[in-house]
Image 1 (tube, rainbow, N blue to C red):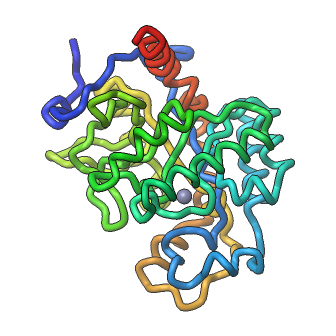
Image 2: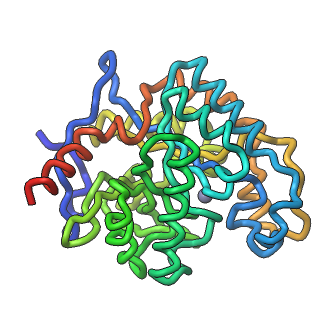
Image 3: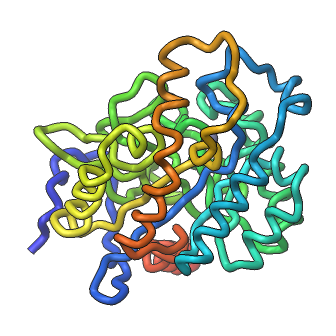
Length: 313
Ligand SMILES: [Zn+2]
């Protein structure tokens, strides 16, 4: 029996069938890390100019290394959606991701919102990031996540460009209501966002409750919600919806000692600094409580059938 509850939301999009992998009786979920530093986030866009990034105290290398250590201890492989800007400045970190069996994926060059770029600017951004990451990591880069989940109704053209530039999947839509991003009517499971089915979108995890999609994918909500509530949500997605979860976090979220950005608005400060000290112990627990793998492995059945279908077209 198909127990997925969100069939009414999906009419414009085709949802392909795929079977989530199961490890030791547990659904295998996708672990992802968006590799950017604390001063590169959209919340501080008005306070820190890109021209000043070179002058900031960089903490991405130490924080990402700690996450890599944690993943190694728990024997978990993950996907690192990494800025090209970071790959240019810290090659050993990117090589370590690849050497330790993680997926190196693209988060664009310098955290520009995709919905504020022209199609031409978007194309050169994602192509440059892919080339740099592949050069540094020595592996193919096929996954993409837009900065601040900034693909939505007004820039669906981005999917065609991703496919044309050699990407095989996107994880750029968070199907929730939010002031900075979101496409609440989008499906909660992988779908083809364009009629030509150029590339599948793997949306961030939500829990469908009381007619709404609640954010349960990670980030600030992982720090806000009590851990047992977050765990309940992911268990519900696995058991009731019978879907894998796709979780995301940032290296700066395990760094309570990061320099404070002066002059940031109250809302940005609350979102960014809330419960930073709790993220690392919660993440350790999360790694133990669920089965995890990199995005391209969890969705391998989907991605391989997509590739086979295109080969036959
Ligand atoms: Zn980001």
